[in-house]
Structures are given as structure tokens and as C-alpha cells.
Length: 254
Image (cartoon, rainbow, N blue to C red; front, side, top):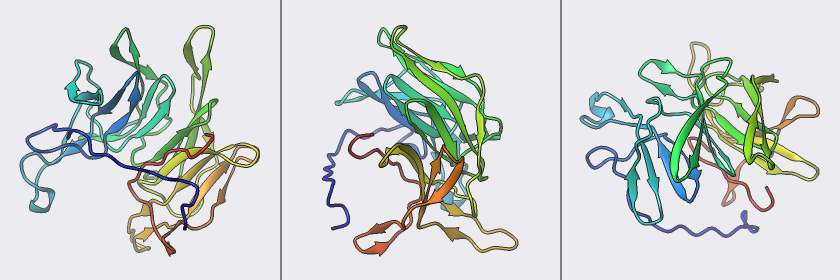
């Protein structure tokens, strides 16, 4: 049994309809206050992609209270394929892509007196989409996507002021080794002696010199040495698998 430490049960919830009969792909998503929040995303509302349809990006925000979805007055830039990083008191939305290409924008979505609000945070040094991210109580991490670049932003909870204190600039980290990892899964997880930022799977598109490649392993960032190290291969039901376009959550003590 590959997954002997965890038991997971899934229950169906009310469907989110953004355009006629459709939800959205690759939105920002997380929990703010007592609600699930879904922000932005994209779809093909008129003609399917396989038939040459035009992709539409959304700036809408929806919340789910456990019973129904509600559209909120808050709007964000019309983006998809960004990184969602969950904090205890809100959600950080990083990068993404829209009709004008990749974005470097970063927002913190929180709730005050029952109302959602978005605060702009320091932008990434470069535009980035289809990347992965995580949070370890001191830093927000983001890595991968179209390039192997990796960054972190200081972020700590001030228990006296009851606010997050964010750094003024993203710090460059050692780049991911090997070929690029688009749409990997990222998470911060406690290891034996510290919390580590993991990046699993992803894919590298075909280039003039290389064929397309899907990663079936992972990497983790060791802050002490500013280096990335390999994990064991991803094995599910006895078979080595790839993880692409997925989300990851911590297991046990985060």
C-alpha cells in the first residue's frame, strides 16, 4: 500500500458555473475566512479548443460557503495558470497568464468585516506562469514554469498587530536543475529536521533540440545550502507516475 499513512474521502459539492455550462480552468483557489474562493481562470465559452475556439480569461471572484456559489464584487486581473499559496488568514495569488501573456503581479486576498479585499504585493522579478509555490511560516516560495527560476518573499504573521508582514522584494534562489517544469505541484512539508519546499512532476515542452518530456520525480529546496535536491520517484499503485497540473496539500504536521 503506497499510501498507508493517509485516508482521503471526496464528496461532491455544488458545481461552479462561470459561463454557460462551464467552470474555469487553472484559476487561483483557496480558503479565505470561512469560504472557498475561486478567482480568475479561463475557458472556451463559445467554441471548443479542438475546433479552434478562442480562450477567454476571467477577472471574476466566486465564494462557496458550503452550500452555494456567490459572485463577489471584487475583481482581479484576468489571469489563469498562476500560483495559489494558502496562508492561515488569506490567499496569495502569484503571476499567471492572460491575453497579454505572462504576468508578474502578486496579490494578497483577505477578508475584513465579511468583505473580500485584494492587496498588491511586490511583483515578481520576472513574469511567471504555470509554476508552483508554497509557504513555510517565514517565506512564500515560487519556482518553475516556463523557466527554472525560483524566488521567495519574506512573509511572517505579526500576532500583536494581527497582520502579515511582507518583504519588499523577492529574493532569487538557486534555479531548478534540469529541464523546465511547467505545471508542477508544489507544497511545503515538514521533513525530519525542518520544513522543505517540494516541487513534484511537471513537463518540459518540445524544443528544436529536445522532445517533450514529463517529469516523474520531484525536487526539494534546502535553504541551508541554497540548493535543490532530488526526491524519490513518484510511485502510485506500484507504478511510476507523472504529476502535471495538480495541487498538493501537506500531510500530518505541516
